[in-house]
Amino acid sequence: MYWRRRKTLVGLDVGSSAVKAVEITLSGSEPVVTGFARVEYGQGLGPLEAIAECARTGRFRASRAAAGLSGPSTVVRHLAMQAMTDDELKAAVRFDSDKHLPFDVDECRLDCQSLGAADSEGKQRLVLLAAARNALVDERIEQIRALGLAPEAIDLDLLALANAFELCAPLDAEGDGGAVALVDVGCTRTGIHVVSGLRSRFSREIPMGGADMTLAVGRRFDIDGPAAEAKKRDEACEAEVAEAAQPVVEDLANELALSLEYVEHHEGLEVREVLLSGGGALCPGLREMFEAVARKPVRWWSPLEGLRVDESRVDVPELGRWTPTLAVAVGLAARVRAA
Ligand SMILES: Nc1ncnc2c1ncn2[C@@H]1O[C@H](COP(=O)(O)OP(=O)(O)OP(=O)(O)O)[C@@H](O)[C@H]1O
Ligand SMILES: [Mg+2]
Image 1 (cartoon, rainbow, N blue to C red):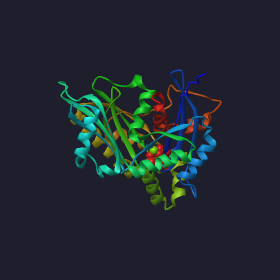
Image 2 (tube, rainbow, N blue to C red):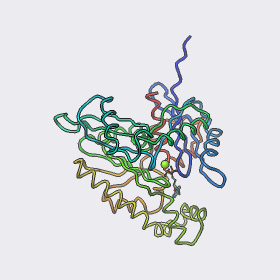
Image 3 (tube, rainbow, N blue to C red):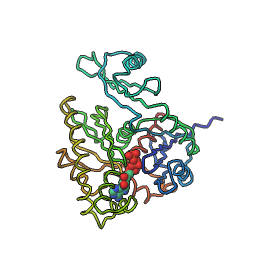
Image 4 (cartoon, rainbow, N blue to C red):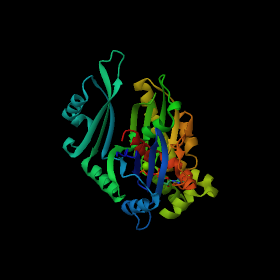
């Protein structure tokens, strides 16, 4: 007798402030959230301890996980190249690696994917290049094993962000030259991914996030890290926090605006709106500042929108509380459809 392999996968997001793990199981073709855990780092609690805690509290049934990477040891590029096969593409990128990669090609894993024609004659193809240093990939594989699971895939956070959007909000996607910018403000970095008609068009990471806002709050009120973190999250202090964090938030908004201007000029796309995720974006005043500086409508989106949640396995209020920070984990688990 044959048993169909259960289609279930954990998306493991080892962030710079917390580990988030979301399990998605296919019920027929419907993706259902069947597990969730989130553990923040703290005194004596680093990523590995947090992952072990997630393994205890997540009650995962999956045997495999996909994890994501971000930061200076990773690269995502959109290149216009001559039409050729995927293998030829990879060889061409390797040959020209000095031009595309800030690190040695022999030190990294590299993947290329054709996104379709880049011009109307079809002579050029838009190619997505993703690469990450071996050391970082190996670290994530170890972290998946620390969760008690086997590695299914190692992805990049920026790509997972777009996968989450595709999983949850396909009807929102603009296909007529319009685009949306997914912006995930984390603790130490902010990821931007512009998609048009669900096609990836531009992505960039900015090395700024919630930690910089916490530092600004700490400086203003002359308090240390944990006290500044608590103040930043204290709903009773919203106005003071918004004012203290404003210079940092404005810098980040300017970087975002520059990226959107670049996309609109070079790709001929109209970015219709900015969709926010990430815990860093919860900082008071951030949404309004982004809207004012980037001159686009800015709103939150939920990576769980439209997804059924198995209430017998998931702490639903806790899941709801942290939903804004789960886009990357959901996007990683969304690979269950290909598993
Ligand atoms: N209620 C809140 N108000 C303001 N900021 C918050 C709130 N809750 C969390 N944050 C901030 O969210 C950030 C963490 O968000 P998130 O979990 O998305 O980051 P991460 O994935 O750990 O980091 P990164 O993506 O940079 O590796 C922290 O900087 C934290 O201060
Ligand atoms: Mg993150």
